[in-house]
Every structure is written in structure tokens, then in C-alpha cells.
Amino acid sequence: MRTPDGTRAAGPPPDTGDAAPSGEQPPPADGAQALRTELAQLRQAMETRPVIDQARGVLMASWRCTPHTAWQVLVDASQRTNTKLREIAVLLTGSTQGEPLPDWLRSAVLSSYARIAGTPAPGRGPRPR
Image 1 (cartoon, helix red, strand yellow):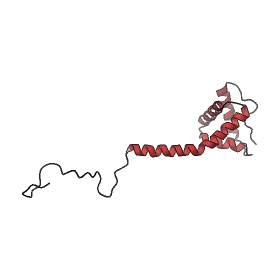
Image 2 (cartoon, rainbow, N blue to C red; image 1 turned 120 degrees about the horizontal axis):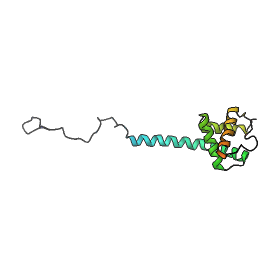
Image 3 (tube, rainbow, N blue to C red; image 1 turned 90 degrees about the vertical axis):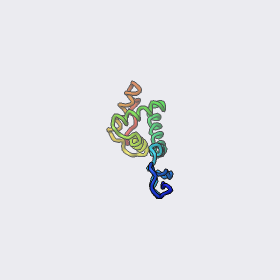
């Protein structure tokens, strides 16, 4: 700001309301990034949920167990084998269509069922084809 005699007045320059130079967007707020991340995670969950529900159905039909027990078995097998739950679900559901069920997965699922239910799985569990 200038004084009447043309010299610059002391003090900070006037606030024009621009936080960033013209043409540049301010960086997104942390909240906006968190929402974008959450949205991406929700979209992935919606895409993978059907195959996980089908895998629960395979276990429920094979062992006549509850949906909750089937879910716990899938989660336990996933954690103990360090394999994403959706990958386990894909392999289990594939075994109903003639895909071979890997021995490591069959063993992990049987062990998880025994751990969760407190009893060995009825029969031999999901059978490899």
C-alpha cells in the first residue's frame, strides 16, 4: 500500500484472498485424500465380496456349518497362510468348477475349521478335483 506522497506504507502487504499463485490449485486437504482412499477400498470390497460369499457357501455346504463359522475359517486360513482372503475364495470356488484345490489350501482350511469349531471337519472337507 502507498502513502499519499508515493512511498510504501509500513506493514504487511494487503491480503488479496489468494492462498496460491494464480493458476495453481492449493494442495488437497488430508481429509479429501482420506476420502479418496476410503472410496477406493470400498469399491474393491464391493468387487470381491461375491466370490468371498460363494466360498462361504462352499464351506457351509461341505461341512453344514453356519455362515459365521465359514467366515471365521476363511479369515483364519487367510491369516495363517499370509494369503489374501479373496485369493483363497477364488481357489475354493474354482474347485467346484473342476479346478484343482492346492494341497496347502486344503490343509489350511481343514486346520482352520478344526481350530474354529473345536472338532475335525466332517468328512474330508472341500475335495480337490
